[in-house]
Image (cartoon, rainbow over all chains, first blue to last red; front, side):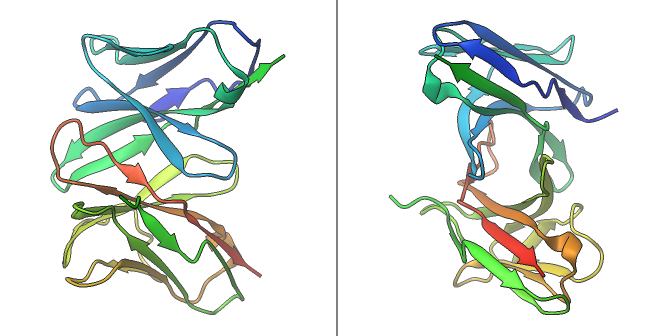
Length: 112
Length: 115
């Protein structure tokens, strides 16, 4: 089983739609959770950290369910510029400290 | 405030040559991480360094790969005797410290092509 699993998509949605991405992780000792966005052939960019209480940043809402080891990202009123691959990322604390484990990403295409 | 810088952005090497990839962390960041992204795959952790110390190299191939982060200058990822399977995008990330929520910021990457 992969450490971080995501539906690869692609999700093709019309502009203005609401779209949700899900992610599960296998290590219950995981400490920190993130959504990154990666455009084609570019570096990953931090979209938002995910907190147990859930958090919102404009049109983006992230939720974390530690009991189910499940993370979600909701994008409302999607824009053409939201087209990208969304990476679910988990931090597993080890004796060596801080390293990120990435899901393979969910591709989003927002269309006119 | 400059972000994470990597150079070169593109590197072409013939099989058997050496590749040196450089990474300068964001100002004020003392922790550096290297990740590799193979074509059509996700990012994989390689190594985590602080100044003059390798903290976690559990993701590094056992042979041909090495990394350093000297007291002065950028972090270097070195690949000796490159093979075609080393062709990938290599991303460097940095963070200010190991504190929750452990956010890391990525550089633009070096795309290595081995011919």
